[in-house]
Structure formats: C-alpha cells, structure tokens
Picture (cartoon, rainbow, N blue to C red):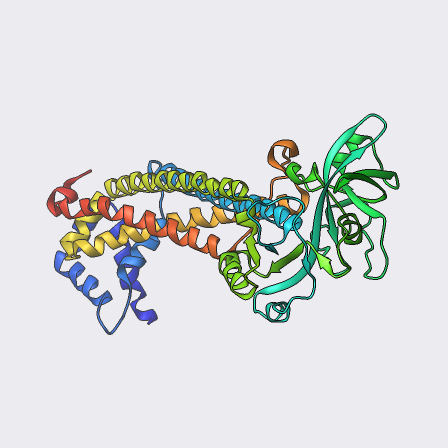
Length: 450
C-alpha cells in the first residue's frame, strides 16, 4: 500500500498547487492515469473524501479561512441555542408537571358526581378493583386521600384553605426536597395526629412559624367546628395556586368532621411510572373501576395548566426553525465561497475526467467537516452550560412569575440525538442545490481563471 503514497500526494497537488504549475509539469494523459488508478479495484480509495480532507487540512487562503470560522461559530451558536431551548423547556415542563402531580397524583378515583368540589362524597377504602390495579403494569403506587375546605383564623388575619387528609400509605417522595423547615406529618391507622405541614407562602401571609398552633374552622352541616393543629413542617413548591390553599394533615380529622365511617375515604390517588402513558393508563383505570366511580387524569383536572405547558412547544419550534435556517443559509454562503475559491481546482479535476457528481461530493464532504466541527463545539457548550446550571444554579428566576427560583434543565438523550441528526440532515440537504453550480463550470474557463 505504501508504494502508492507518491500517487496520492501527487493527486493532492492537483487540488492545491497553482494551475499554471500543474499544466506545465504534468501531461494530461498522465493525470488521467493517476485519477483512474486511485479509483481502481487494486487500490480502493475514496478519492472525493481524500481531496476534501486535504482541502480542510491545508486551507491557507486569507479569504476563505475567516468565512469557514464564521460558519463554524454560526453552527455552534445555533445548535447551542437549540440545545438549551429543548433542555430548558423540558426542564420547565417537567418541574411544573411534577409539582401539580405532587398535590393530586397522576390519576384520581372518586365517587361520580356532576359537580366537582373540595368535599367529595365518601367511598369505601376496600374496593374490589384495588388488587387488580396494584398488579397492573405501569402503576407505581395507590394512596387514599380526602379534602375539606376551611378557614384559618389568626389574631389579625383570615385565610381560606383546603385541608388535604392523607393516610399512612402516603408517598412523601415529592415533598422530600420541598420541606424547607421541620419534617413531614406522622400518620398512623390507629390514632389521630394533630400535625400538619403548611406552605411558606401561608406562613408569611399569616405570620406563622414552625411549631406554632394553627386554628382552622370547618363547616359541618349547620355547624362551624374548630380544630387546633400544630405546624411540624413548612414546604415551598413555588406553585402559588397550590401553596396558597393546601395544608396536609391526618385523614382521621376529615372523617370525624364529615361523620364518615372508619373505612371511608374521599378517593384514591394513583401514581404511574411514566407520565407519557397517562392517557392510556387513565382509560385502563376507568375500565377497571365500578360504574358509580369516576377516574380523571391530572391533565383533565387541571387542563389550563397543561394546555399552557403545551403552548410552550410552539415557541421552541419557532426557535429551532429559525436557528436551522440561519445555520443552513450560512453553510450555503460558505459553500459558494469555497466553490468560487477552488474554481481552478474544479477545472483541473474536470480536465482529468472527474465527474460533476464526484466533484460535488468533494465540496459536500468539506461542508460536512465544517458542520461536524460546529456541531461538536455546540454540543460541548450546551452540555457544559447544562452541567453548570444543574450543579450550581447559575441563572435564577423570579419565583412569583415562573414558579421556580432557578432555570430548570432536563436532558433527554433521544431529543439531543434527534436534534443533532436533524441539523446535519437539513444543512446537508440545503447544500445540494448550491453544489449544482459545479456542473455549470467550464474546464477551459476554470483553468484560465486567476
């Protein structure tokens, strides 16, 4: 193989030396023999890729080098913006979604009623469909709950709230990093607990603090009943729609206030493994429960929130389209400049007998090198920023407006892969049209061009 290296080097000289030196030093017949030899079966060589590689490695023109650098920077910045847009949007949607689910579960099963309220009619805790649902693939956990509206009264403040009663089976995973002070409520099946956790928003509004007594008044029939609780934990989710009204306590209090039987609850909250399966799992649960019960997904309970999250996808799609167009137009301009600069080389290669399609491949390969380098730099910058943001939370947000204090980041491997492949594919397809100009270049005029 090494004995053929002089022929390869000579072929590269055809693409980098001044035209008058080539035409004076090599007979036309000899150059044709070199070209066909490199494409023969005895010495298989991707001639187009070789020439493109040498062009990229030995670019010395003061004119094309800054253009190539600008193209690489443009692609890198465009991909970085697209990368971060997807990561931030995914993180934002994931954070809001988890906060809503943390207060209501993925699917709720309650007694069928025409009007939904914070005080649903009771159902029996022991249901025939529960064992089948617990064994259903995709369901992670089932827990009981009940809610009752009330009023908190302090010396100088009054605030309407909803007491969410929970049992010993409650999944505290959502509140693990949301409880800023104190601890979670200890609930058992045998005794009633007076402990509650309350949001920081309500604490600031009512001038309350950890371990304070909390007096709440409820309407039960024609009577107003008061209950005294103890604040054992203060949480903060940033979602004001829930922080402003919910406190969490023992479900035994709601049973006693509503005069329910010991085995009655307000309903069931079902947690699933994958949010993307929520619609399918909602239908599965609905088919499994009795005719007097109703199953609603969290998307059906809070459609305004999830519709608002879906609208954010449109903003990201606009950013993706604009960035890809910018990168594609930049590459078209760069390719046209490279073709103009290498007009002499194109004429020599055509004189040697190289086909237009092969010459187009040379410049397309060269463009792919530029696109690849820009994509590599863009990915490195995107991953670097995401790592720093996840680790240190460099960019903050006003929580009152965005429901979170730092810019959220969520990396999805499939989305990142599709983004990179889509950028390469779109840019490559946009380059096919300007590369057709090569077929219009005359070998005689190109060789004389200086």
